[in-house]
Length: 245
Image (cartoon, rainbow, N blue to C red; front, side, top):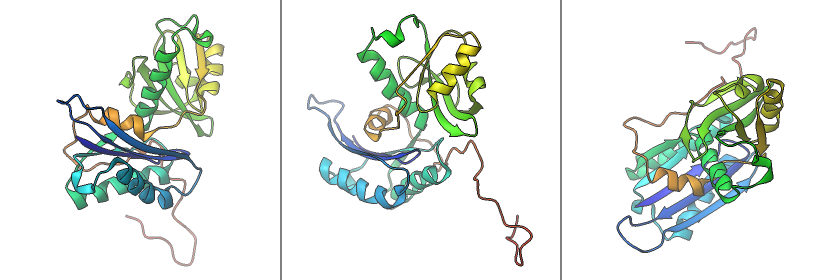
């Protein structure tokens, strides 16, 4: 199976191509790129996709599946990746799998936890669930709760004040992402055990490739997951007002 994955939801742009044969003993071939950036995702994504396809030795006609993060994230970033996935799917008749940006981050965090099971900052948190919390500004976070084994969700992706995110579920919390400190601070006020880590965590398409390999494509067109409306508002009170529907 040949999979192309990419993400532009937050402050990074990443793309990866995975080639593997489920019935063979040959090792997987994975080629990926990850670049932090606050802006410029649209300009970089197309070139990055081309680079990883060349690096993996694949043509677009070889693809069996495209994986894309459909949100939550910035309005523009989410729209860029979904539009690119739609265009490629139409051009090459490829199935598309949509993955939550928070699920990709949860898988990355779970791998970190598995590699450091005795880390001091995780002591006393036996039986904890994993909460991905990304700063959404305005005192809110994009949040989703998972089991610590990986991208196994307990809740749907949510947009919540940090205090409400800290109250999700029961038991101790391991919180990862740029909103982790705010959520842990709120959890401590609530008397809940919680620890923050991986504040710089961002979705990585290389991890998304492996998640997509186990998923089934949806039957409809991939749609962006917007948890907050766009900041841009229609003009009113001008000489020519924007049409409304």
